[in-house]
Image (cartoon, rainbow, N blue to C red; front, side, top):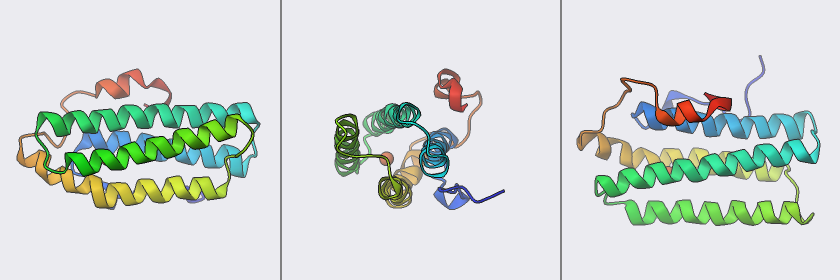
Length: 155
Ligand SMILES: [Fe+2]
């Protein structure tokens, strides 16, 4: 089997299974976008669908993280949320340009998404892991997550 475009390694774990599983969904969506658009050169409809799903899931995932920050009074809430807002604005802008025919999903965009996700998990998300665990958040599930249940395509 060839190596995936974005590879999940334990180094990316924040120590909380629920969050790790959500990050793995993001990794899979970026890999699907890469496989369909770059490797298989899928049509615009397929590409739009995956990009839409990636953006939708990213927004949900950021909201989950930000809820945890508020519930547990995470000291890094402001700057972390700012990083989320910046990425959301950038990606929505790219999506708009794609719809208007001014941009396309290309290797440059995929590399940007890959690097952003890896960097964000390693240098931002990994900071809240130990904090949330110290506040009583459990590292593993007793039951499968609600987000896994509603997100059929990737669960
Ligand atoms: Fe984050």
